[in-house]
Amino acid sequence: AQTPEMRRAYRDLIVFTLDEGVLGKANLFDLAKHTLRFTPERGGYRVENAAFAWDGDFGPEVPPRTAVSLRNFSFPFSGSQWNALTVETTGSIGFGGGVTIGRFDQLQNAATALVDKTPSICVFMKPRMSGPKFVKELADRVVITWTLTEPAGGIQDFTWKPTVNRFQAVLWKDGTIQMSYDEVAAKDAIVGVYQAAGAGPDPASVAAVAAV
Image 1 (cartoon, rainbow, N blue to C red):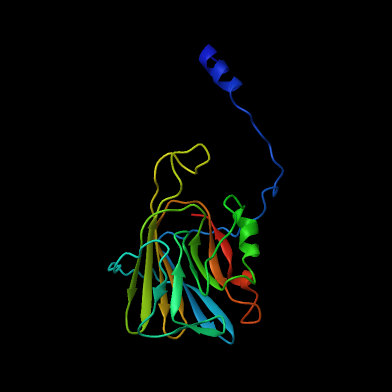
Image 2 (image 1 turned 180 degrees about the horizontal axis):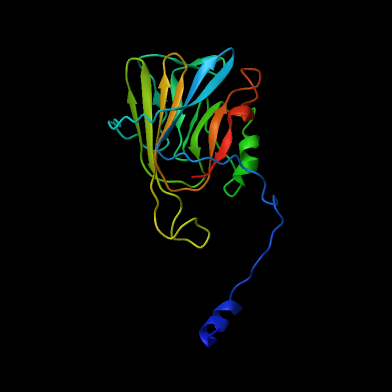
């Protein structure tokens, strides 16, 4: 039986019933304690779910809005050799510019909208994330690590308390890309590789929205 308090609470709720697929479709998979490896192959990439690999030595923190210059090698990506990276707090890496989507875009649609824009690697891209990012360059690779939280505490935020999303990208001198996920609280994000038009296969073929 409903108590008077329960009846009063129900008056403050609005319940929506939505048709299946009305919010779009996602490619869902679990990322926690997983490593994805993108190996260059015949103009595209061979994508593997590899054994979990994690470098606990993050290196120095990168200040916000600071480009990262590579000193030891140039990274081959999207038909060019790159000596500088834009490491975004949103969990992405841009080549020749930043990587942006609309603040409240549905990620299922935003992933497709990234095609043919700035060449990018979306390690765990989600708007409005915040937190430190770290970069360590070695002779044959550069290691980029994020420890981010989703927006928290506001009426339009994803959670009332900060969350932990710790993930890492390793860019190897030969063009191999490795993405590892130590701890992931967010339930969705864009994960994938986006090359410039004509530089490789359809970027959407290796892009996904991940659920953890």
